Length: 97
Image 1 (cartoon, rainbow, N blue to C red):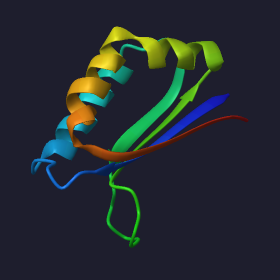
Image 2: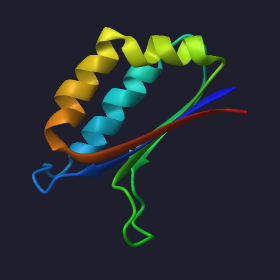
Image 3: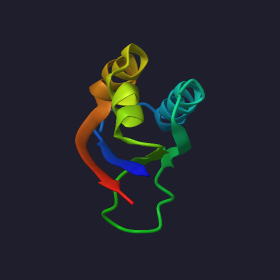
């Protein structure tokens, strides 16, 4: 399995309710993907100080399925329009299990 994990920290300009919009956009996109085993995303539950604001965890059948997800036009639109204006920091990791 190919795992993809992303952590986001929002800027101070993120509008109220925007994390829910980001979550809905990503979940709708995930429904269209081939080779996806599991996909979860959402805002921080607020239980740990200093944690990121939003996370994505996805498991793909293989690296090729992740690459198709990562380079698709819809993913680039979400990255640019939904996340781009409001992301202060983005951390990502991929690993195989």
